[in-house]
Length: 268
Image (cartoon, rainbow, N blue to C red; front, side):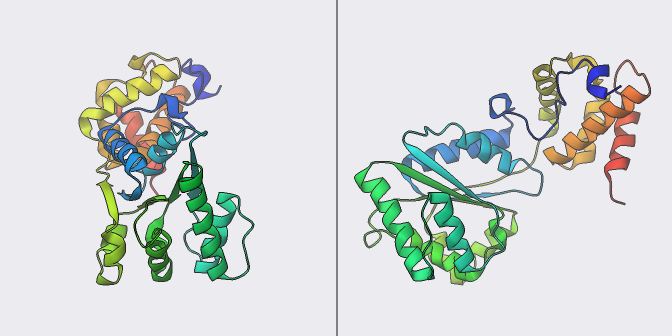
């Protein structure tokens, strides 16, 4: 028997495919969304940094789903370990532009397209570059120039740079000071807090049609203690605990099952 059936779940409540409409508003989620909303109105460059698994990409995905497709286009780029030419090709393809051969021509294509959408059509273009800590110095220098319109008098591009905390260290270097000065908003994710774990688990269980009593309170606290603030890790442990509980025919998930699931999820 699948554990979803055993616990009377319509789906795995802790699966990463959770629809944006069911997002649980953690402190990080609220803070990031607030800054992204401001950025969407003001234009310019935003910076989001987070440890792996803290929910950064999910927050961006949920936020982007709220953008009006009739007035805004969102381009998501996650392959950041590329050359400048390959980066421009990704950007052109995301914008629906047939990329030219040379980088200088693609630069012109992108700027002309963004200016046309912003100035002539009154439309917004949001480009999110995820895992931006891997961007080369050449690409970071180009981003500064790519966001410069009409002698730096217009914001025709809303750019979101998202990555691990080291990204903030990279941008603080003298070589990237001009780009860093263009950052309008920034937020560093802290991870899910201890007092958010129980409400999070209850909300996810309700979304999947289950009672919040599937996990006892001590089990939830133990799961949070195993995750070091990572929602991804928390979801893995909770999913494993549900499976173990179903295998054992338990009435609810306890702390021992959570610890067993945490040990299974560990690589060492």
